[in-house]
Length: 449
Image (cartoon, rainbow, N blue to C red; front, side, top):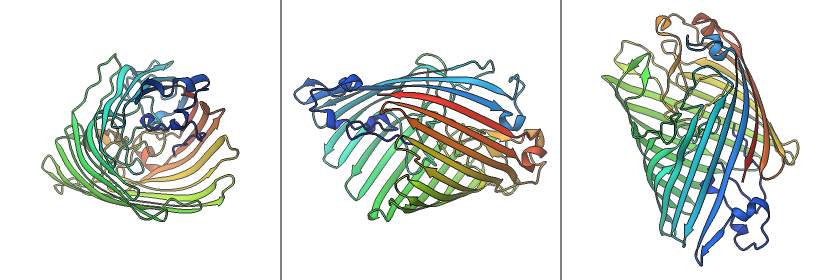
């Protein structure tokens, strides 16, 4: 559901700012405005490029978490403002060495309730700081704090939606050619805290290999991955413990101008305390561009992720989405664990400077012996039911989500966004709480350079 900005050939601002492409400005001696901050010559073969962003976002929630909030929250309705400011420097030292550093300063205003530091506020932090070394035309080594994502953000993401983006302390070796890419890495998520330079890391560790092969260019591309995940931070059905989980999967997809598809499947095994892990996930999407002038795309997606089958069979079947994106936006804290959903959607660019996404999600539990969990980034938390109502509901019907996201790009640097979501409560949230419908409205303005 990310809406990626269109940009001119001279200015390509990426979601991951270390992938920005301003090479067209390298020899431009007549740069104007903020373009003057790009490719400042340090020496004959060295340069520095500066950039950043400021994002202001207004949010309104009605009946957070279906109206069931903790005693520390004064009201299930909330108004708040997120402020995000980030600046970065990209230093190229010859053709082999690159240094990248990014500082963030994020705040939440107007909401008197306790904030969630990992999501809402991080007053000042070193968000990224890494070094690249190219030891061959196709080989790269990177070490340091960095944003990372793979595939369709289902297991790893930089998490654009919340105020605090997710970053990792990591080391990786990358091989890339025209036809294939291999990433071998070890990473630990950075836990954002609300103060000044007080973030922590190395509480969880992931070791993995991710590969991409262009088998038939544009028509058949294959991702494959194997991950080993070690943590003490997760709990399932309110049981906390030590988790050692291996995930192996494959993703097949296309990249065409008209008809596209995506199929992904993975299997998880390992141990959680004394429980044997057996979990899996199946995902599919097919879409068709019926009007290439306005990119009018009609599509349907589906997810099927396992939940625990039997609380007394010495097995854990709850799928762990590790550090995934919020799959259903910010309207409700629902991740992909123990979820079945179907999602018809439409995308369109009404004008060159605007885009709209509209979708419907029919949400159900896969197993009525397991609860629903928040998205994996930052540590999955069981959001429903409460411990006292753990196995009280046999209903699987979570609800129906209606979602619209829109963006308008005033120019290459300034954009506006308006999102609204409405989640009707099904029998499951009604039987495990007050079960009220959720309304979410967001307006954001962003300046990037």
